[in-house]
Length: 610
Ligand code: F6R
Image 1 (cartoon, helix red, strand yellow):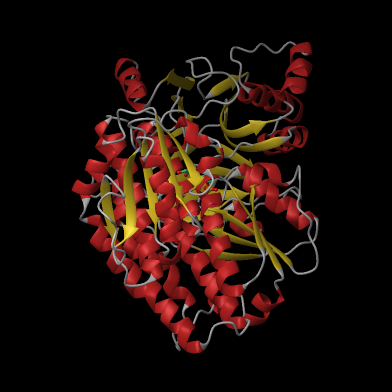
Image 2 (cartoon, rainbow, N blue to C red; image 1 turned 180 degrees about the vertical axis):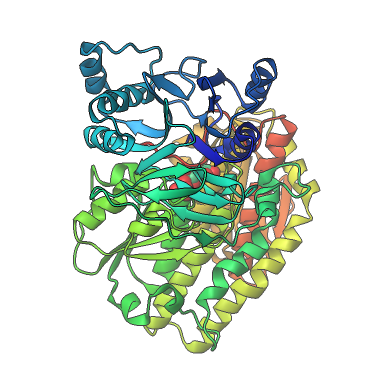
């Protein structure tokens, strides 16, 4: 949700800004801009639209000789997408870019208006620039000015700031929003996430909450409040530049769908011990901890919440530990009852989602143990949770998650097995067999499903001329249906609802008429007969039914118009195959409709505002 980047060093800064911004565009793409220091001062070029629009502007107004610059790609919050609202913003001697939201910007704005400030945009960011400028006038020193201004601001922010007359210096601060610093051969960088820095370097340091840093062409200092200065502790990321590129696929989403078989192995294998049993010791979690858990509250947003719903069924089925799933943005306003033995599990691919972070902080304030299931390493949620389990999916660039969700599901599956095994509900033999299914059957089945594009395209053709589509399923398949419906909606813009198959007849079936597409998922053998009855109910009212079903069930030909069969080497293999099928159907529908698959309208990858 908004991407920021910056550079100071010996090389030409603008090409670096453009390269980094093109990677960061998935965080928001309403407007884009850069500010570059030149001999005569700091120049800003910005516009509504995507990076191509900025490239065009820079062709007309080139900035050739800058060695120090900041850049921004925006997901509009305060003020719509426009040239004026685009970042960077200037106020007096300050030019800055911002990711986040300043909640008390109205009161700050009127205070600053009273002091004679003039605002050209509707943004909270311009207010922050004016506040820092005001503090700079009093303090005459950037770090003190930033600290003073930050103390007045409520909300979330990561700022990259240039001050007039301070050549080659970029100042940064973060609270709630992510910020990564990096060391390259020709200078120092900052960005909202590591993927934007991979074209330049793999050496990084994640800035901590409320930390201020100063980047110079020859070094970086972290600047704590006691006036001392110290260098960052640089680490080397395992990500490679290739991992953030499309690698021959038409879209990142398709690439990420294809990466899933390997991603499942990467997420499961670190949690398997030498005896082949589920074991989270490498994550600092032992069997006693699992045994101490009496009740789990899963908190997450969107697809991560859907992964939680899948996990709920698995944990309750295997480990018999009561599990509830909560939408993160609702959690702290209507918190469920917590008691001795409650564990709060926060799931987040990005590790930065503001609602999930707020829920995590709320749980911690109540003194409840927390565990985060996160993909992006060293992110705020991962750092702040008491325990963390990384999904190791690698960078996910497409806005619609696929491998992120898939690896959340596989980690939750392993948690369910580990808890059941620790509680003595699963013998060594059964636990080993279940782990093997995840490591062996799931990737093989998903690989097999990847080659069925023609089936997915055919199913997608049946959807694209309709305004409303339904997914139905029971048990785990209802949880999968929710994710399937979200995938279809967000990238193809076709309205789609997920229903528990037995629930449709309690009202919503009135929307089914001749030709209405209904996709039914059936991965649970025992539930097939019931689901089939529900399919008959919609078919007899004219629905066009696509059934995504395990292949060991003899489906009568009159049950569905289209059948997509799923491998049945194990239950897990069937579930993950169904997931892959619904992701591919959404992808094909969006592709047939000519949608911008990796960057759906109105969305951003990392939602760092509440
Ligand atoms: C949908 C999607 C979103 C995210 C949600 C949570 O495809 O990607 O619904 O799942 O915004 O994001 P994270 O997992 O980063 O907290």
